[in-house]
Image (tube, rainbow, N blue to C red; front, side):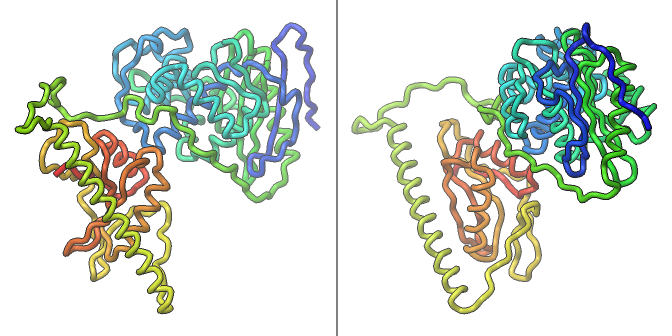
Length: 455
């Protein structure tokens, strides 16, 4: 039987370790697992988790060209070699952070998502708490030693499990021996363990003088998968040997068959400022305007426009109230007549409208309806989320969409408009930037949406 080696570490960084059955989360071995220690580049696991989350929620895309800030370019090694001011696709920053453990790429990811290093670090800590990482606090995106930047073996093991199950589409990044990072190919800092240990496929290494040699590793053999974490290794080779021993222990103790109980994905915390330099403005919009002239009788043009807008808002609200009342009548009529209410659509199904013959009608996805250009900055824009065969369906979709996208649709007015083609489900009373952001986020969820300009 292979025994676990206990090595004296009097002069090394504090040691901690944990092994779990990844399928169930059961702890198979733990030592100093709740001791707060320096995580070093294990930090980038959270940086990458938030990067995947941001892509999923439409904050940024993998093809977004990120301009490298000076703060990122100035980070010490390990680094990709980014230059201040250059542009690079977001996907290459992810690859460099995951495979090479590049500090400049990690900082660039954080600033691209949250606008500043400090804001991103706060989001990292909020996300950690949402994941149940109760003894973790982040101060930066890369993991270089900083006061208060601490975690535990238990928390990092849990984060590794969430990366595996919450974003499986990206997990293969951690097993790549090398990858194209846009400006050059980079080698995996964990390639020795990946090559030497059967079934190893990730996850992340880390080293600083204060932390020692850290590693969160995952391996799969048959139906079994275990995750092992080590803090405070004395060298790369001794750390890898220790992790291999822990993985062996995990495979011995884990049952050959066990039901997969995936961890719950945490609530989306996002940025405290939802827009964070992601708004798109009308090209050529005037930067200043003259004071409005008085109409005959001393009434300002702007006052008249504002009064008309207020009246229009009242009419819209009245129409919505009437639509909601009609929706209730339809629902009560169907219930009273023994009719069957429409079944709930799957959450991940793109919302389509249908014709009377039951054929799907998709509104132009990239269409933007503008009848005149408005530079007033008023809430005269809206979005259309589909056309439906009856008012009840349209109202139901509006309500469901409003609940799913509260951050961008808060304060907008829901309205159903009837035409000879069906019932249009719209949100109105938005600025152009609000409508644009809402549509982009809905499209990221595969929800049909196009903007409606002021008329």
